[in-house]
Length: 146
Image (cartoon, rainbow, N blue to C red; front, side):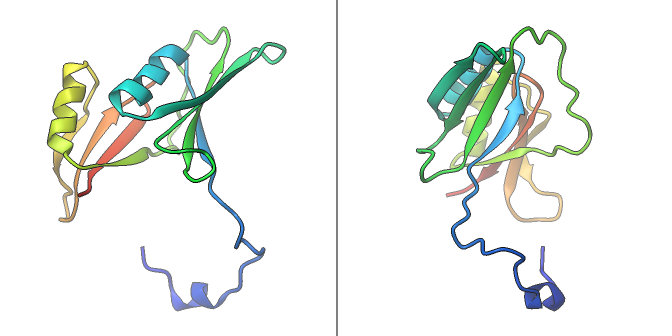
């Protein structure tokens, strides 16, 4: 995406020099299954997990690095949630860079992970990508990076 000169000329509405993107949150039905997917299958670490009995929910944070230096994923489990969440049509995907996309997809497939878009080049050239589904059907884009 190329920014227009008009956008570049506008000054920021706030001083964002000390802002940091901390996490993105997704709601999950089976927290243990989701933690297994993001840690064992995608190699993230479980950074912390906290139950909130009065609110009847649990938060688990997973990521590739410490929250002080890296952006992470917050998995929110609302106790008693039985139905699948309606993901709507606004959410796109989470993207993860991987060094060997074909090998990664082979290992995920062996673990019965759904791969709706097998690895291959993007339609208009460029990177090799694939899409996999997490246990709740969220799309995870894998992008091959050296």
